[in-house]
Amino acid sequence: MKTNQFFSFSRFYKLLKNDLLINYKQYLFTVIGAFIVGFVILYSSMPHIHFNDEYFSIFGASKYKSIFILSLFGLGAFVGLAFPNLSSKVKISSYLLMPTSIFEKFLSQFLIRIMAGLAIFLLIFWIDAHLARFVSLSQMTDYQTHQHYAEGYKIIEKFDFKMLVYGHTEHNQTGTNVTRIIYNTPFESWTISLVFLSLGFYLFSVRLFFQKLGLVKTVISAVVLFFIGAVLMVGFSHLFYPETKGFDMKLQTYELSSKVNNFGFWIFVMACISILFLLPLGYFKLKEKQV
Amino acid sequence: MIQIKNLSFHYKKQTPLFSDFSLEVGNGHIVGLLGKNGAGKSTLLNLIAGLIQPQKGEISVNSFKPFDRKPNFLADIYMVPEEFSFPHISIQTYVKAFSPLYPAFDQQKLNGILEEFELERSANLNKLSHGQRKKFLIAFALSTNCKMLVFDEPTNGLDIPSKSQFRKILVSSVTDEQLVIISTHQVKDIDTIIDKVVVIDKGKIIYEEEIQDITSKLYFDTVPSLTGINNVIHHEQCPIGQKIIIPATAGNESSIDLELLFNAIINHKIKSE
Image (cartoon, rainbow over the protein chains, first blue to last red):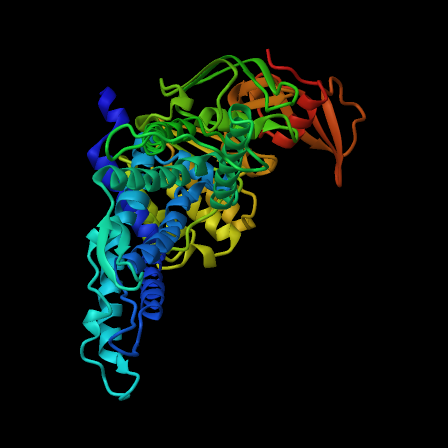
């Protein structure tokens, strides 16, 4: 059966079981490590002293989002370490000779590194954020009285995934008190998510082009690509806007609709294209892999 | 079964290793693949296993194109490479993780071979010596019951008793449905188990013969001196005199000395018909 040569559920299950049997300790330590590091970062970022009721900064959407983006580097490293059996010639032979299809090999890594990785990452972040808040609130003291401060929940907000689509805050005229939080528009949220997803797919797929130090080389290649892109933009800026100076980039922006400008749309299109392009690229690279 | 027709292969920026190479071997054989260093033995094994792609020509192994790496093809081929690495797990876990991928895997056979090789199932693979790990890999390979078994230098790193155990186990476990290819420099380790010899040099087969045919044509002996012996095809000095190859006479067969035969072939004293 042709389909059986491409994908068989029973074979795929055996491959996943094989991976888990061999790497369960590594995965377990990674989860525990991520949990501890996440907790430490969140806990140490949260305030533990209440100074007075007039001047205090709220630990809310903006802070959670910054820490979340920082934590994504950890997830990126986990994704970039996909296909651990391609790190040496000896391991490559054994991996390629495993009786499963290339699609199953690719899908198993995608499922473990991206799907499960992302799900567990979000779960760990959620637990860490709530746990760190709970511990911080229980330890919060008042600067004046040195007593436990019971209204800490006003200073440290409860984490909600909605906070990740936080855009910016609007301030009143004095610039101190926040009047309201402006969340990203659905288009902006989608674009940002797709950009992160395409970066993840880049780490996952381009890693297949390298044997040793795959993650490091993949990151370097991304930096080089970014640099080339920036140089091109500077070049075009000088070409089309002769008044451009030095390494400045000039980009004319205009509104495509009330909430979408041309630059945002370009980023959105690039993220979509790279997502569609990177996974097949990785798959065919694995298919053509030789020792 | 292997069918190779007009194969051409070269590594990047290197002179061709194989050009117009053809080979056909049916099941039910244990083939000794011999050749000097750099003759292309390991490359040929990699081509057969589908680990590299030929530039030209056709390779068919058990009616599959190896480089397509179809699961059914991979489930019926097992390669024991010269160099290998294992994850940090026990033999038991390794078997639990990998054996379900081979439909014809025989657990009882594995238990028997492990016992013979004196390997504990609870032992961590990376705490075993190189020789012990190789013995485990050989045991696992034989237990897969794959139609095609490929061994690259299987006796490297094995001690003397283990080499003889390897020969015994291999001969007793291989069936007529299987094809075993053994590439080695340690020709003495396999001269009693192979039934076909293929010698390659500079990317070409320079000798291909079944052991039965060789012993019916050639006579291997050790004599104190060459005096009075006519028709010596090839001879080499040894501590007790001379090792010689002479034409066999009817009804007079000898045990094959694979090393002597190999040297005679490499020195163009013997050619296959």
